[in-house]
Image (cartoon, rainbow, N blue to C red; front, side, top):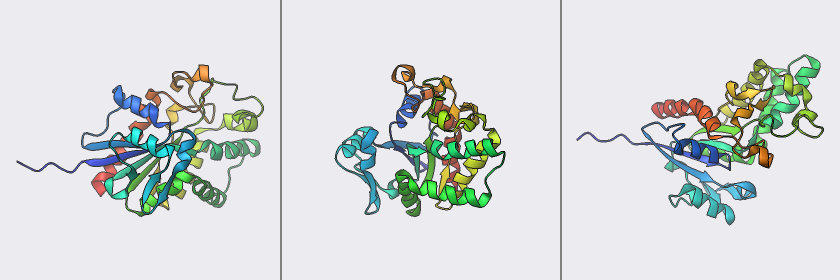
Length: 255
């Protein structure tokens, strides 16, 4: 009998944002490639800060280790680069809204766009500031194919996001951003990450509304009751994965 090809070993690493993806997979809203072996690893809430890169692997301690073992379900105490072909960072506290808000507001106020030099320098500083990104950089150095699905834009219509002190209250010009403006900023982040061998997967344009928010249709099931503008529905995860799965296949074939 012909030998079976090795599976495409994929690990999703992240925080509570992975919950919507796991539900999407469970409910058949999205499907991994047929040749894929998929695992999850990470921690939720403040415990995510207890995960670090140390001694050639991603390691967790205390409560974060308990969470990682529960989320993984395969007894995997550490995330070792050699164990996976592709690691997909999902959410992982990479809050791109903090990068988009100030720039989109500035573009609206001035009618200009930042120079490429300014954007390059700012994007490099921004990505390096994020703990999970620094872990992703180490995994890429170790030979993993690394994709990064950032934390999504806030959900519209859940709280008064235009109120003083809220996102659009601070950066009202962001509400008037165009697809071209978003593409400019996504491009700057992607260019910065590519220098470290990391592929950033932008939030799909058809999920975006009001400049830099996520359509309310993708709100999590109890978003209104909990005032949750961060987490999204399984349908949202499934939509983003339409853009992610092909990248895992292309990278696996190139390896």
